Length: 261
Ligand code: NAD
Image 1 (tube, rainbow, N blue to C red):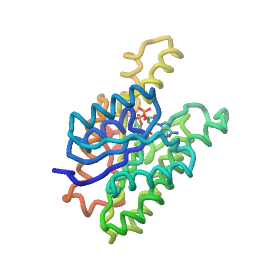
Image 2: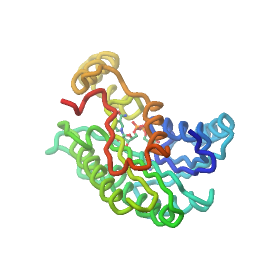
Image 3: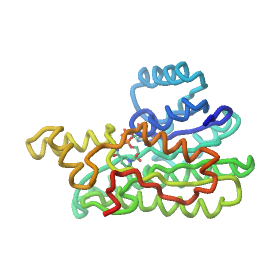
Image 4: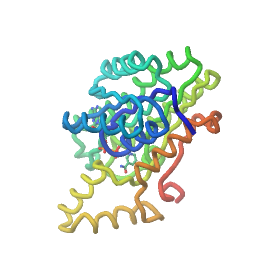
């Protein structure tokens, strides 16, 4: 498939899943705006690498998406930069692990702001332009935790269930506008977000990251393998394809059987 002539904005794409998705879109010829935090030199190198490897324009927007006004402004800049915004991937997210009665309220607020509210603000800002142009693909990166719960992740699970709900509402409201809105629900993907959890577990248990990787997978996934950011990128490409034009309001699991249980 080709995305030549298409434009995309992928939030939280300086690492992990977002970078995998941005890479997949650029590989197919889309002009891409990256977003996320990180070392400015590394981000500059990433922009250059992606654009030279794939021969497409790549831009970077450093908006802090925990701030609603920055989300809307970023969407506006992305549309202005390339003239359209065809594909919006709401991916940026954070995690905090603690029992509910010890969960720091400021961590709850931060997770809800980024993992849930930024998705709302992004869709709210992007849909009018997509509707005017008669084409849009919105892909919200939810989680297996958008469908089922785990202990100690109250804010994350609440936010991701919210993303699945908001995805369905947006899909209903855009069903005849040439726009599809879907959620991707990954199980474990080996990214910095999960690496930090593995390091914390290894420290607490006095083990190592390899041991904790095996036990993390076996706790949740029948299939004892991590999903890769490249595989999430491939699923996102499918959702952008013409073949997927009637796939909307769906929550697509890519989770090694986690939610089949
Ligand atoms: P990651 O930590 O590798 O990447 C997160 C990205 O979000 C980074 O680019 C970071 O700079 C950016 N970010 C953080 N705070 C931000 C802010 N305030 N504004 C803008 N950008 C910000 O994490 P990941 O594992 O790639 O996670 C990406 C998404 O996938 C998240 O929504 C996460 O919940 C979801 N997810 C991850 C897994 C997994 O196993 N890794 C599983 C299911 C869902």
